[in-house]
Length: 289
Ligand SMILES: [Zn+2]
Image (tube, rainbow, N blue to C red; front, side, top):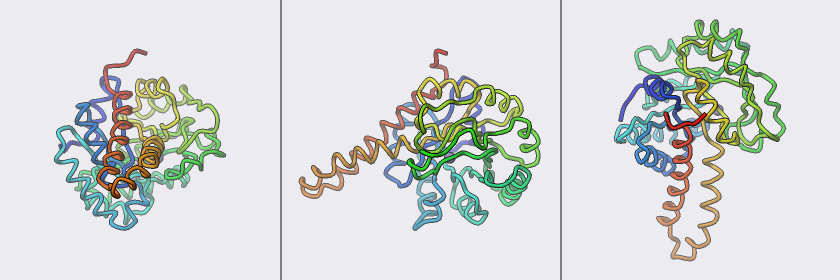
């Protein structure tokens, strides 16, 4: 069903939960994620990566996910993830996205805020929630191995910049860098909880977003939600489990009359199980901290 992203996030946050946002490179994965959310009775966000959005049929995928979201029995939202191209952002908003991450994190903070403010202006009247990222997250969104050499300490969000950045940018959600990385972690991840607390205090009512959640342990994720993270982006975990399940099933499906439907069933089952894991982990009101 249709809902406003910030209302959904605020509702989950109010009870100590967070909304999982799962990267869907295709419709099959999205079907599985929405099915898991309906089963759990919780809202979910379908993330579309910028390479997907800019690739063949990217805008049609966003429109298809919009239709899937509207038909769901729980609030489902569609977000264009990590976009730095204003044209792509406008196209995705027009195609049916509820939200975009206007990613100016490679810029200096003032230029980042100006970039986000420009996006907010360009989307005026479309009721689109704009997420911004302050600080720079190491690693590559689509390549889990790229974070192996990344140093999470570089580019962490500076709490002293947060209030000014939010006022100047008009962002409705703020992605933070507090020791989290995209892709697989090098060694044990260590989130900077003091920094997260200071960022949260400075952000006021603007909900915080944690990217790169795959690889954090369940206690860290629960603690992050309790510390005021309202949206948790999960990509690597979903890709890893789906590819492994498909690889294992593929020879059997080839032997069984080139069983494409069977293979897609395995794909959906695996993606749904990972989505169900994320939903349960971030479910409001079930935590024992
Ligand atoms: Zn991300």
